[in-house]
Length: 133
Image (cartoon, rainbow, N blue to C red; front, side, top):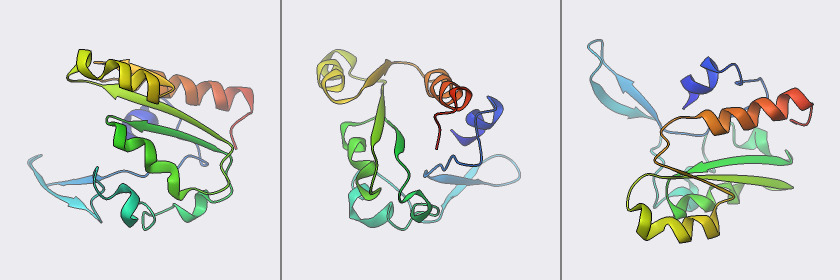
């Protein structure tokens, strides 16, 4: 995700990404994940509170939350004093079974969209209009 944001020139100094990072060997084979692994079952149990940069986000009014499960909607619970949260859900499997619950839960639902086009467009709009803090 970070690489796509950088390539689209929307990775500004005020953007923080809290994500899992993979460690590849010289042949491109995944060998491990760096740092504490964030997964569906520990997002509210402290993994995010220890994430690098989360304390820097305290007091920031805007959160752009991306997720591919309903459990991801609680990821911003550790950020206090937020005024605006825009949630984008990536619905990639069991589309018909999950569509209604995603639409009722996320602000934007992207169906089988593996790009970062929509989040990047949101970031471009925010930064071009001077509304990003």
